[in-house]
Amino acid sequence: MSVSGTPVLELRGVHTYYGESHILHGVDLSVSSGQVVALLGRNGVGKTTTVRSIVGFTPPRSGKVVFKGKDIAGLPAQRIARMGISLVPQGRRVFGSLTVREHLKIFGANGGTNGWDLDRVVSIFPRLGDRLKQRAGGLSGGEQQMLAIGRALITNPDLLVMDEITEGLSPVMVEATVNVIRNLKETEGQTILLVEQNLPMALGLADYVYVMNKGAIVFEGLAEKLESAHDVHALYLGV
Image (cartoon, rainbow, N blue to C red; front, side):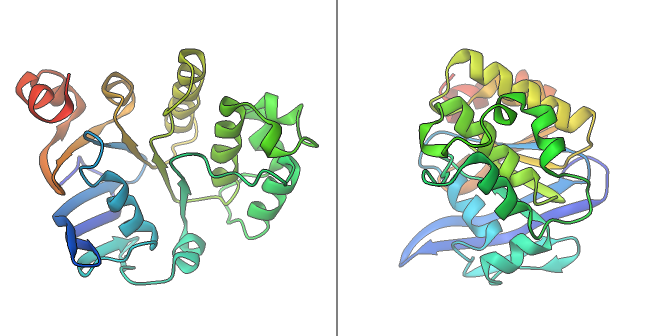
């Protein structure tokens, strides 16, 4: 169980399958209000399946996904999103034919009450403000990542799930992304589940960390505890 605070998200004994392939084996995970919690592990260990289980793309076969006190396992993904979970997906997944403004307008249409709107998104991503009329397909990878984060924020989520968001970015854009997440945590109090392979980035941002291997949680603790757990680094993180 993560550090103190009101639980926003709890996974309890989650088992998820693709067909008959058993991917998640009894995953327990908790994210408290205002925390950044990191889920770490090598490629192929079940991190993205965990994300898909949370947001409704691949519902668990058993176990509970409790969001703000309600078990949402098995609910349609659209309903889960409307309840306050927003995903920044791996690979960004922007719509190339839509402009930046169109992305933010569409995703902001049903936004909640946390205060995110077009002006506020542009205030943390000024480059998007300069490209509101540009189609997303013409943006750089870093700009598309900004748009993917802005698109998620403008739904006014209670929980922001970020899946491998530094993948394929230049070091400069990784640093810029880290600064955005730090601002969301420290200034906005945004609750974030950060799914990453980038250990230094995660340790610099997270309050609490989980390490996954072969579909199960093999380590959990405060970020500083993982920082000194060199056996865990070698066995499960390849560093």
